[in-house]
Image 1 (tube, rainbow, N blue to C red):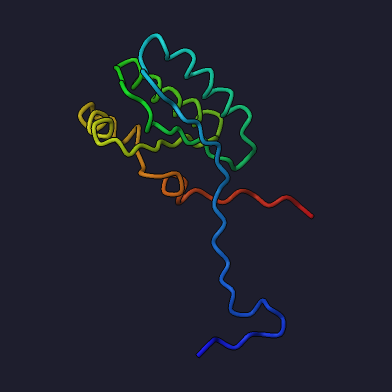
Image 2 (cartoon, one colour):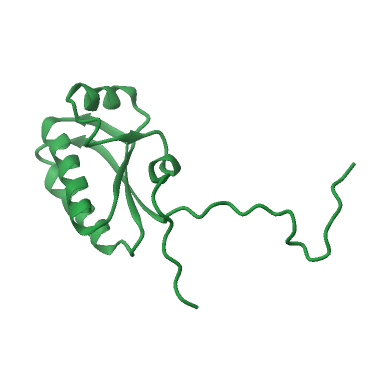
Length: 131
């Protein structure tokens, strides 16, 4: 038996909770001493251009090599975001990279999430603009 329809069309609709907007920044290839300056420039541009309430999500799924300088770069990216009030989060589904981060003792500084919606969960939604 179908659900009865309402006359206004608004009763019974569930509104999804608002999530913060995000800037997704995919990283790929080798993340080492040679690539670190360019990665930091990209992160700084993304963080600097992020509107208030926006999160920057670094997607590590296409990174093939994460060297010590790459790990340092990711830590610096998060610290820069913190300093200017823009959350920087990490997404990666590669078990070997997640394991590397954990083995280096950086899981607290570089918490890795399986997808972008999970990465921004718990952040406050973007502030509404006055109308």
